[in-house]
Length: 227
Image: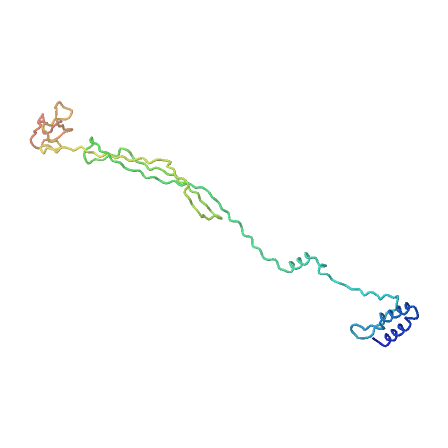
C-alpha cells in the first residue's frame, strides 16, 4: 500500500466516529478502490487513471471462428488442388451364341446272298448301295468375334444308307466229256437242249465231236452235234 493510501485510511478512521461514518466510509472506499496509476502491460510505464464519469474507449477485438469457412468450400479447395485421376473406359465384351449345322456321310454296308441259279464262282450286284446323311447341330459361342466354345446339341439321320446286295452263284457245273469240244456234261445220258430227248443232262449249243459220239449227238455224221 502506498503512502497516499495509508494517509487516506488514517483520515477516514479519524472522521468516521464524528461525522456519522457515512462520509468517511465513502472516502475510504474511494481511496482504497481507486489506485493512483496503472502500469502498462508491455512497457512498465504508468498509465493515466481515467476520471470518474468517463468511459474508456472500447478496443475493437476481431475474432475469427473456425466455422467462418464453410466445409464445402474447404473440400472444394482440396479437390481442386488434387489432380483428377486418369480413367480408362473398358469396352464391354460382345458375347454371341449361334447354331450351325453340318452334314456327314453315313457309309453303307454290303450284304452277300447265295444264288443257286448262278454258276459257282460268279458274282452279281443285285442292289446298288448308297451312303446316308446325318445332320449335326452345334451351339457355337464367340466373344468379340473369337470362338470360345462349341457344343453338340442335336444329331439327326436325314437320309438312311442303302445296303448293297451282291449275289454269289452256288451252282456246280458238271465235268466235261473229253470226246467233245465244248462242254458236254458227263451223265448217264445227254441230249440236245430243245430236242426230243429226255436227259437227264442237256447240251445247249453246237459241239464238235473229237472222239467217240457216245451220246449220239451227231445224227447226220458231219462231225458236229446238236446242230
